Length: 182
Image (cartoon, rainbow, N blue to C red):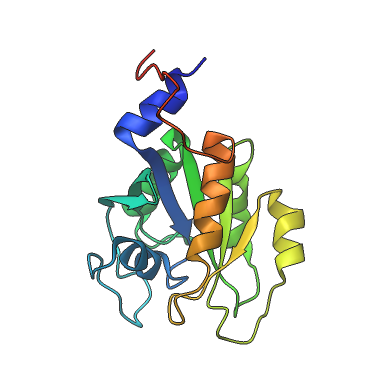
């Protein structure tokens, strides 16, 4: 019964960051890691392959996987890897640039969320919104956390949501036994 929680405590929650190019996936990774691990530019499609980092959010270990932006034809290999990573993920963080309207690429990503533990990162809240939080909640069925990497807001709400999703709202190791593999 506790093998999945135990595995995640030992290995970290395998967390895949998905989104369109320039949605802020690599900026989110850098923000969470606390250093510039991923290259961030104004040029869409900077991330071409998978980048992996371990981070700790108040006792929760996340094995963060930054992926290539999902769009139609460009970078098909990186996108294929991103989709495969999403299939194997414990958690998907779907980063949405709130300043742009949703399109076909967003619909493709939303299909990957179906039946999976996911959180929508409503990014770039420092800009004027073109999509609403309510619309994203309705279309994905996932919790939506407003985040601004520029203003460094939303991290606490993200931590709280991950804790709620995976550890029933709390982490307590002192008086509980967790089996760390099946």
